[in-house]
Image (cartoon, rainbow, N blue to C red; front, side, top):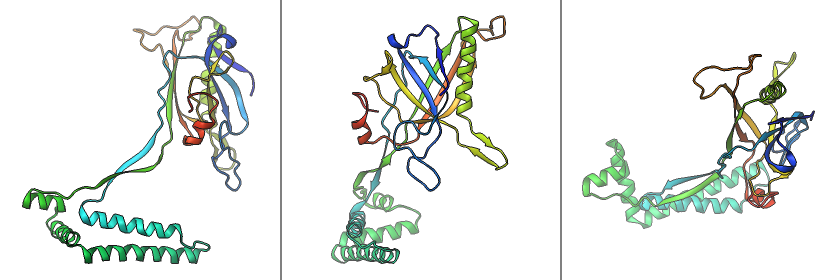
Length: 291
């Protein structure tokens, strides 16, 4: 890191709440050949300047995103398929996967177990067979089984809906800062801050290779009185997806200082964390509210 850029200039770190931005070389979340990784926190060595900005009136809403989805196993036929699939999965959990060949054999065995289970349900349950037959007739007419039974007798199959978990999602968050420099020196700092965010969030050309170096990622911290704020959430390292700058936002006409510096400059930053948030992260957080 090389120095500190701060706005407003009169902000006293030891007496105020503020946000600290530092950027670091990108690292993957897991180890791959030829690429080092970072399991948590900032990744890679730091670059450029640390940036200290005032605490906005309202901080971004940061939600814990999880992907849940509904799955229907309609009627007795759906229940039979669900039972067959879970039976096969139970077999896979205890199967031999010591080699590729053993894995293929175990997969075939699990598939056969699933089909045998479903066939047995067909043999022992008339409702399953009737639903299967209804589905075939409905498909011939370009309808669903439920549409056909609703048309015939005003009934539909029980959807047997289950809410199933697919996995966690990456979090995104946004900041917006408004700069109104009170001096030529502060105007220069505002420009340097904007340039830092643009520069380190952009890829770099690697000469004579036809390749780009991946943009740096950012560590964002809520600070209070010079230390991390224990009452506000943490962030994992995050990619800056967008840097937007607007001059004299909300004004009726363009206004600038004598040297051409706009009177008001608005900086909007869009981030997305590069790793998902887990229960372990919340438990290991350096604050009282987690991530």
